Length: 311
Image 1 (cartoon, rainbow, N blue to C red):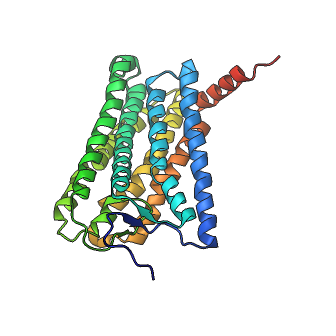
Image 2: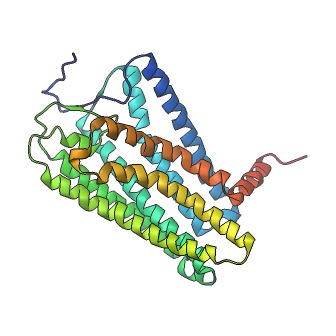
Image 3: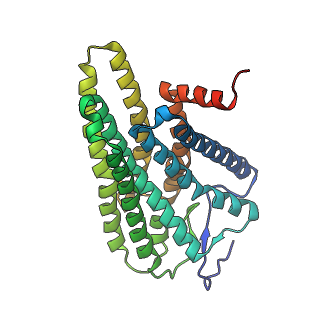
């Protein structure tokens, strides 16, 4: 049985996998997914920057989604891998706070950005003639800055509150990163204030954006259903279904994990769900957008031709 140093300010991350051969194989799979995520999202950002045809609000928003996914997965996986291979599970008080801040910031910002992307899709399909008026570059920049700013403020509030609490129990966090709800189990005072903070935050960055996305796509599906052009209907459906798939992959496990009552949550289940929205979703996003989008596939061919011109 391991004995934790109660006199230290460091936390202990219990990790995701056991320290055995099975755990090693699973971690190597996670690292492989991490590399794929970095390559896919970096490639998507580079593609959007290099191809002038993708210099539109939709793809500018997509580049920010890729950037958030890169930062999102980089917040958790490198530290998890380092702890597993080094055998050292500790993380300093400051490092835990930094990790918590970036995790909450990226999670909140991405949820808000997905709502902005649904609004862009709504304007493009339901109001195509007024699209460039309502979705100007200035408006696009405002939505992006708004997502980053609100996400950062949410991350700051949660992190500052969590770090000022007294931790008088075990310093062992039953997670593979500094998940604030998991940290609350170690606090020796009543955490009812934070429980209400989670509810308010979930409503602000999860429920309200999700309702906005639902309303946008409800209207979009109605318009698509009544389109006469089969080609226009197919293109609109492909664009919307791609984004809707990303939204479902992100919101479903994240919302289920954080909107459940505390009494129905378990540390083991929380860790499994966290793998889905911290590792799987960032890896799948560039794959979904590239395989289901002819404009992205065409941009890939054009950019490839730029660096490999035929003689």
